[in-house]
Length: 112
Image 1 (cartoon, rainbow, N blue to C red):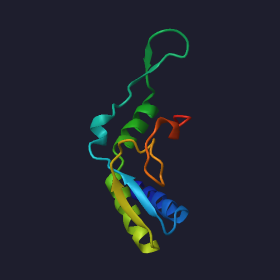
Image 2 (cartoon, rainbow, N blue to C red; image 1 turned 30 degrees about the horizontal axis):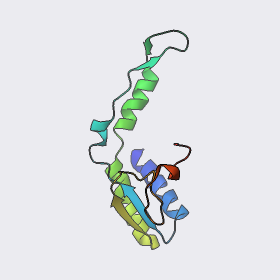
Image 3 (cartoon, rainbow, N blue to C red; image 1 turned 180 degrees about the vertical axis):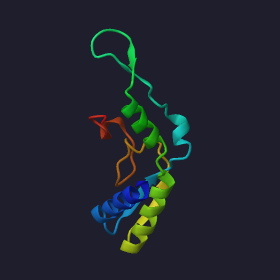
């Protein structure tokens, strides 16, 4: 199921961006940088409550996602379509101009 989803995602990315340079973020140690959520804030009042079993299962499955496999699929599909996929450092990518590379807070006005 994950392999099929990765193929579909990779195909969609490559089709949407033909003949271009695709930057893939370095995802090394991603799992160590994120925490798995076990509790969520209560809707009204103070404190937290335990997430539902369904939500915990979804969190667990998403944390096991094969990012390296997805990057490999994007790389080879990009090469077949005439594009090029490279790995880039994640620092300041949300603030950098995609054309000139200038990084500034003004390049990300909505912060989302």
